[in-house]
Length: 102
Image (spheres, helix red, strand yellow):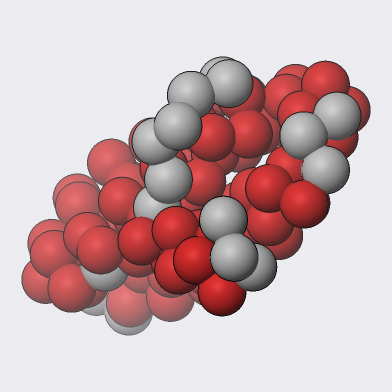
């Protein structure tokens, strides 16, 4: 079917957008922890959507989902960091923190 690749492409595009936003939000909280309050609801919404996108992508294109596991994991960790005041960081956020001297 031709619909499947189109849907899979849309899901990958949405995953990229969620991933990008998750990292930007986590970076903001890393620089200014007070931002957590302002961003927590959006992070919660994006976390739920990320799970939905992952499940849909797994159904539509399991190979693409497997290739994006690292991206999904990083986005999940970034959104968790925004939502909860815990010291668990994604690899990319941890790297950013180290370059900041933290």
